[in-house]
Length: 542
Image 1 (tube, rainbow, N blue to C red):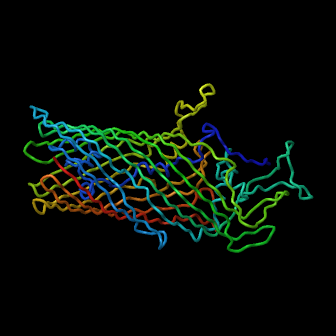
Image 2 (cartoon, rainbow, N blue to C red; image 1 turned 30 degrees about the horizontal axis):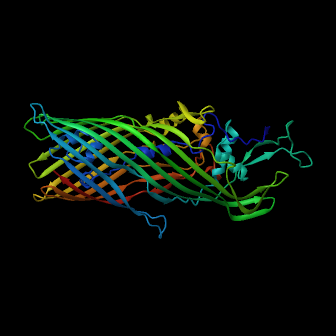
Image 3 (cartoon, rainbow, N blue to C red; image 1 turned 120 degrees about the vertical axis):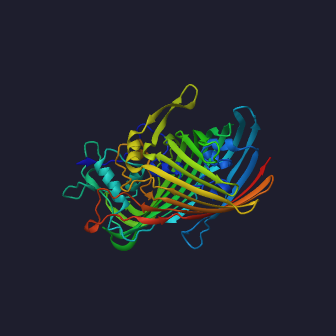
């Protein structure tokens, strides 16, 4: 026997935003993509040991040490999504991807030959994506079942579960006397046994994401005896993420007012925005083992990126259900249900894992350059925490205290994410003295484990602010590139094409512990995220 519960839970994060940070949001800050100058993209980014390209500083800072002349360049691209969510959707947009310079100072000493300083802007990730993930057979399962299961089996609620309760999508089974009157406790609260959800036939989902991560690199490198090159890069990432989604369920409504076949149950609308910055440091080296050979080996290590982020969220539900004064649910016209009040923003800290890179480079005469690179990062080591904020009555302002670690969410990172292996291969063939042809290929293994689920029953303060249930386990990434470049005495121009291939298994909600008709489970919807992109670069060496 229970009393009616309406707990807009708030513990450590009271008075903060209702948008939770989970592995399925945090993976955006660890994007597996190839963006930069057209030469860098055309060669698949495999320049960690070959060097002498501004974009290569994001991979191996020592790559800037191979410059013997100053260089300045900028790049932009046109990007389009392969699969359109509908025929009228315009999925093509322009992107400013790179701008930077390096100043080379010839020292020409006995050991140190050059000292170079560079500043480079480079887009780290492009979030622009739109997709539809409808599921026409969900075996009677419903998003409301996950929320009812959470309310029935945990000691806390979520904002989404509370709003579903308010919209009469999750309904208590009230205890009644012989006259049909609801029993109450000594405080006048209605008594009930458990929460009952809906049962749906199908669902519809669409989401559009926008924004990206802009990276700023400040590099210092040197050339020692033309055999050893060392570099240091301090990187700053600027995050700007937007997401707009709509979720709908359909089924057969049965209640006191009758049965309605094929009726729309409800619509859930979500808008999310995250912005902030992250800082990391990269150290790199390139050396030639044999003095008379152009063969090079590159090594680089990248510290975790320490993100300081701020998030916002808004959500509402259109529901045809309402409760009368006798606690009976009826079906009528759709009404919009939204939270009783808006909350302030959430200040959070996300720490990504360390990255290590090994690269190889070799040139054959003046006509062929070959490069390869391997990177490893264990994303299960991603860490999350929250800044404790307090209000000073004397000064009349908010202040930030210590960071509270989220042990529960860190455990979810460990259970859903895994180590990622990435490989880059590239070549450049000089067709003439001024014209070069390039090819490249990248492979990134999936960041998500095969068994990854988005359970919301783990003890994490973040779930006190969770307004969605959907998640997508993204698969491996394959990137194919090709390019052409013209290089004069000072001026150069490059063009490159990139085809990025990736799909994901999308789930509207977690069916752990739920069973549909005849024991059916929620099947994933395959989402195609393939994109085409053409890069253009202009540069000047002096």
